[in-house]
Amino acid sequence: MRYSTRIKPISYFKANAAEILADLSEGAEPMILTQNGEAKAIVQDIRDYEKTQETLAMLKILALGMEDLRAGRVKPLEEVVARLKDRGQDENG
Image (cartoon, rainbow, N blue to C red; front, side):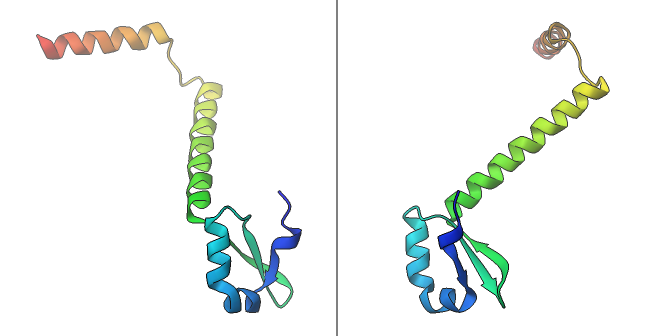
């Protein structure tokens, strides 16, 4: 992703907020906002933000699973399936 053309001072955002939000909703890349020449915030479409959050959640789940695997906190598939079948039979009579 190239953000070089999407870096603007906060004053630009204040003056053009409606246009920027419309551009974002139409698929424009996120915009980096600066204050006193320093990057301070990123403005992006809510759908893109939600996708990013979902991706991060999935990566966290994957990392936790890999941690469990390395620590030996796993069970063979056959054992899990057998336990689920036994549990289902206990509940059904």
